[in-house]
Image (cartoon, rainbow, N blue to C red; front, side, top):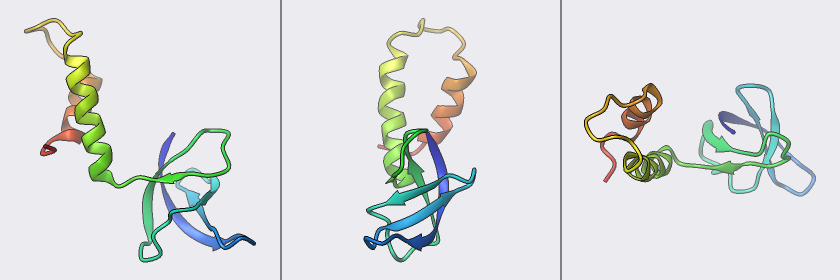
Amino acid sequence: MIDLAISIDNDAHGLTVVETNHGDRLAAPKWPQDSDFRLVVFSPNGKDCEVIPPRELAHDIALALEAAKRSLKPGSRKPEWYRRLKKCAAGVT
């Protein structure tokens, strides 16, 4: 899953604990200490998350779109999900 999260505490081991927009509380081992909120990815049943910079996610989306484009019919109207993701990846090289 992907969500926005904010730092709320540190656990007994000194790891940052974050809370997502949807109320999930997760350990964030690589949380940058100079930020208020970040984009995180995590397993729905997981106990921890990975901080992911938006630019890196946009780059990953661009790569996935290139792979998906090969399976779409040339000249056909692209699905709505494809157009949405293309906006997310705009400007990524």
